[in-house]
Amino acid sequence: MDFIPQYLFNGLVVGCSYALIAVGLTAIFGLMEIANFAHGQFYMLGAFFAYWLTRIAGLDFWTGLAASVIGVMLVGVLLERTLFRFLRGASLSSSVLATIALSIFLENLALNIWGPRPQKIISPFESGGIELLGIFTTPDRLSMLFLTFLMVLILHVCLRHTHTGKAIRATFQQREAAALVGINIDHLYTLTFAVGAGLAALAGVLLGTIFVVQPSMGGVATLKAFIVVTLGGASSFAGGIAGGLLLGLAESFGAIIAPSYKDAVGFILVILVLLYKPNGLFGKRT
Amino acid sequence: MKAAARLSSPLLLGTIGLLLILPWLIGAEYYLHIAITALVFVILATSLDLLVGYAGLLSLGHTAFFAFGAYAAALLYLHFGVPLWITLFVSGGFAALIAWLLGLLVLSVRGHRFVIMTLVFAEMGRLIAYNWTDLTHGQVGLPGIRPPVLSIPGLVHIDFAYRPAYYYLALFVTVACVAIIWRIADSPVGWRMLALRENERLAEASGVDTQRIATTAFVVSAFFAGLAGSLYAHYNGFISPDLFYFSYTTTMLIMVYLGGKGTIIGPVIGAVLFTILPEALRVTANFRLMTFSLILLLLVVFAPEGLVGLIGKLRRRASAGEKAGNA
Image (cartoon, rainbow over all chains, first blue to last red; front, side, top):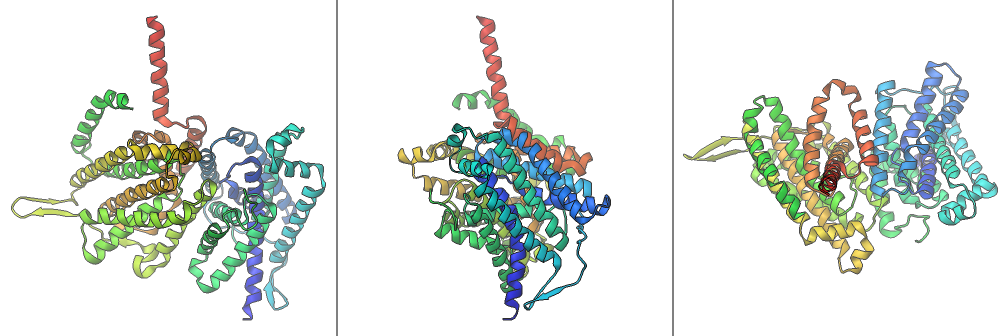
């Protein structure tokens, strides 16, 4: 049973990346009512931007990280101002299909630019493991945990205590009423979209130092993020974070039982949640 | 609807005539291969149209039913020598059964959750086909599925491994499937599906058992996808877990949207066009998927009614112009 803390830790690290991606997805879904199937591509783009900036352009890791997150946010703003304006108020199937098309487009764009070979982002830390309370880990993994918690904290504070945060929460609850009291919905959408894209990009860069970077990673991330949103409930930030950690942990322990069916764990979880708590584990009753 | 059918009946007869003499027109084996592939996709696109276009349930797992059907046919043929005539129905039935079971779980939800569940389901199917190596040989796939031989001693002997023969077989099966799907779409069952798509609560208030009609749409569309899987497996002779890939579902959806969803005839046109188009665009192989996704994106945003909708719009404009000219 010695290995249990280790699996717990591994699950937590992967879960952090799921949470970072899912928070943005939840925000976009809850606020704009668009199921963005291209969201995972922001994660992929973030990783590739950082790979390109650090390995080809020669920037150091932290500058590369910041630049790639900002770059992806700009891509997000651009998309929100164009395509997603069109999709606002469109039917679910239209927005799903359009974003799927966007997702395929971005993935193949990356394939054409960077090629199909898995790449790696060079970590800023010295290689070598750390042993902590019987858990074997690396500095990359610890920084993943640390940065996720930092981001969640910043998000929480912003949402609770800033004017914009309050406006976002108000819009989340009642869009029309929020617009009526003078909240600029357009600005809010752009901001939310940019932040969501940026968080996904951050997850991509951080995970790119631990695992590999390849064009197909975005599609998988989208699927996982939607599983998380279904688990956590589509209407709460906390649900997105808790759902992400839960999925990461469940997959980690699922891998002990049946390694080749690790990815099926999410499916089983989603079925159980849909059967017993159709609004998600942390969802509000509608 | 009736008027439209009457108007296009000379066109319909012409098309059928053309399809019948096609092997003489396009001699080359390669073109016949494209024609058979197009026929398989016609079944897939029209069956998906019943679900997406009529019942309004966006499924991202349609290719899983196709793949399950193909695997059922392959295993039955390889282990027991069951010919196509039987595997067509068994594959369809198998896919329908899976759809029914899955429907018990996923049809209780609508909207994005249904979409996700179907997507995850297809991914599960791929995992099973990939990992259950004793049965499916995993990524290696299953080769050696032969087309049937129709042999009545002293009367006929047709080996469908002969490509033109398989073309006629596929043509017959496809026309029969499309005719049945059309009948369903244009029946009270189809109208209830439309009611479900337009407004589920209103449909329910008008006495439509929406849960039942959603299940019907799901199961029927899976049946035809499974049947198409058998038709494909016996033709191609080899299947692998790749059939579960999401790109197949995307292809089917493009066909449905390109032609015009909720029209049956639209997806038929879409399937034919979108099987030929990629072959014609071979030169830009690298940018193929980029081009396709761009097409889909533009279609969804600017022409959500597809080609059929565009033609209808043009025709209406033309007839309006005529009236103005007469007056």
